[in-house]
Image (cartoon, rainbow, N blue to C red; front, side):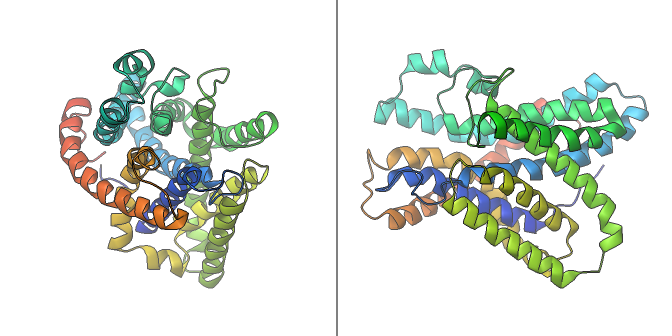
Length: 355
């Protein structure tokens, strides 16, 4: 089966929100601390990543319903999907993690070999979001994305047509529990009843993305070719409001308003009604999207250099240099990871070149 087409406008937004996340993490390098920094709620960019991943996860689930009906076993399908996801995520993850750990152990001396063995064991296998120990905090998302995707894929095949309805209730429920007990979505490796809070945060985002994908599939035939100007105004307005919320708010109930707005933005982009979406569907957006994963991962390397090695005299000037260096390194690791992905697919996902 061929891989579902992906609008390159989505790739542009992926890169944009990866920049926002990096600026959120870099704000601690300035003369101010939260909640007075830049993009204090930039952590909400993770919700956009999760929803987009949920949209494409739903396409994989829907495609493999037919395989299940054709007689393939559920465990086999889940194992193959887990292999594909691992082969997709792990090479770039490993390529960025090894130099970063070497920097901390050999140059900055903020980590020891004993720490790597004692606290980082589960991290080598993308299992830290079970609530286990870790040494690279920012990599929690990759673990949560891998584990959450496999779990929801299994549920999607097991529940079949009931899965989208279940996610329409489960995702808002999980977000409401975060609102009730945490008051924010800035939750990563703190323990939950099962696993970590970050794992459940990503599961909720993936589930909401699955629901948005199903809604877009139903609305697309009804809205195709209509409301172009209204859709453009809606998409631009949503983006501006979201960026303003991420810039000025911090660990507040606004987080959950932002989740609803992000879901509307994802729906708008998936429907492809807006001229803005069509404008952003270009090769440049596609390239920017292709480095967004590495852009998220590589920030760790430079975040630890600023302060101990590279002084921060002017926040915004330093932030721009930080983004530029991260961009250049991400281009390099992109091409390295593509070569590694070929080997990883042969090892973990044989016989599935297009899935």
